[in-house]
Image 1 (cartoon, helix red, strand yellow):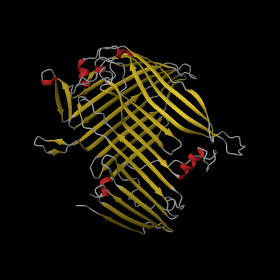
Image 2 (image 1 turned 30 degrees about the vertical axis):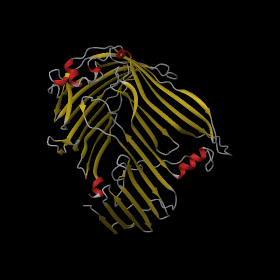
Image 3 (image 1 turned 45 degrees about the vertical axis):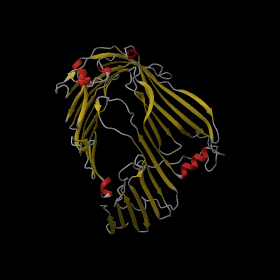
Image 4 (image 1 turned 90 degrees about the vertical axis):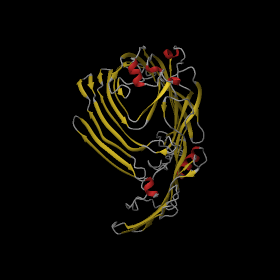
Length: 543
C-alpha cells in the first residue's frame, strides 16, 4: 500500500457571494474523495438567501431567510456481513440528504413572532434492521430488514416571544408557541412504514418562560493576580403543553419499535437547568507602570454544562419517572494553554431514560481534549504563579494558528506539497523553541439491552500530536503522528524538514504507513525562478 495514497484525498470547493441592495445571495458546493477507500462526499449545491430586514412601518420589521442544501455520500462501507456458509462479505452503500428551510420572523414593537418551515428528505440503500412488535410470532417481536430506507419530513414551528422582563437582573423571557402533539416527530412524515404516503400530527399550545441571571463572586488574588472573579450563569427554562393522543399510524411511522413512549402521548410540564461558569483573573499592573491603563484580564477557566430536564407530567404516568435527559456534557476552556479545549459526555442512565426500570449510573461516553505547548506558554504560566520570567503586564502567549493540531489520521495539511514556501513561509530564527500540539479522543459505548435498531458500534481511544521546532537558523522540522491505545500501535508518521539555502529552498518529506510501507520525497528550487527545480521520490510496497 502506498502510504501517500492510503491517506490522500482529493478536495474541491466553490463559493460565490453577491451583495445586493436588498440582501445577500450565497452559492457554493464542495466534493471530496478518499483515494484509498474510494469514499466520495459532496455537498452540491448550497444556497443561502438573506434579504435585508424590511421595515414595513417604524414598529414592524420582517426578516425573511431561505437556505437549501443537498448532501450526498457514495461508496461508504458497512459493517462486515456474515453469510450463511460462515464467509464474510463487505457491502457498500450510498445516501442523500436534502434540506430546505424558510424563515419569516416578524417583529411588532417589542413582540417577536417567529415562523419557520423546514423540509428534510433522506434516502439510503444501507442494510437496516428494525425490531418490530408482533404478537403473531414467537417472542412477540420480528425483525424486518430493509435494503433501502427513505424519509421525508415537513416541519412548521411558530411562536411569539413576549417582551422581556427584568432585563438588567433576572432576564425573564416569557413566550407562547404552537408545537407538535409529540416532540418525538416532525409535523408531517412519510417513509417506508407509511408506504410513501404523508401522515401528519396535530398542534397544541405551549407556554414557556426562561431565566438567565448572572451571579458574581470575588476571590483574593495571589502572585501577579490582583483578584479573581467567579461568574455563575444558571439557565432555567419552564414549558407547559397539555397532552393529547397521537394518531396510531403516525406514531408507528415515527417509532415502529414502540420503544419511545412519548410518541403516542407527550404531555409537557418541564423544567430545565443548565449552568455556565467563568473564572477570570485581573492582573496587577507591571512594577513602575503609571499609565493608569485598564488592568489586563485573562480567563483562567470556563465551564459549560448542558441542561438537565425533568417533566412533572411524565412522572405521573405509571412505570415512568420525570427525567428526560439521557446524557450530559461538560466543556472546559482556558487561556493559560493556547487552544485548550476539553469536553466530556456522560450517559446518565442504565436503561431507557424516563422509565422506573432505568438506574442512575453515569457512564463516560466521550472525551475530547486539545492544547498546545510553546516556550511562551511555560513562561506565561510561571509568571502567573509568581515564579518570575514575565511581568503581569506582558501579553499572553500567542496561540498557535488554527489547524496545527496533530492529526488522528490522514495527511497533515501541507504534507508532500511541492509549492515553494520561501523564506517568508518558513521561520528562520534559529533555535526559537518548539511548538507541540496534542489532541486526544476517547469514545465508549455502554453495554445495554437491544434498542430495536440493530447496529454495530464500538469504542476507540487515540492521541494525535504535531511537533515543530528549529534546530538551527536555517533548518525547521515538523513531525506528525498518532497513537491508538486499542491496537497499541502508532499510525502513520509524517516527517518534514525545511532548509533555507540562501536563494534556494529545499524540502525533505518522509512518511511511514502503519503497514510498514514508506515514501520519501526531496524537492529543491530556486526562489527567484521556481521553475528551476529538482525533485525526487521513492516509495516502498511491502508484499
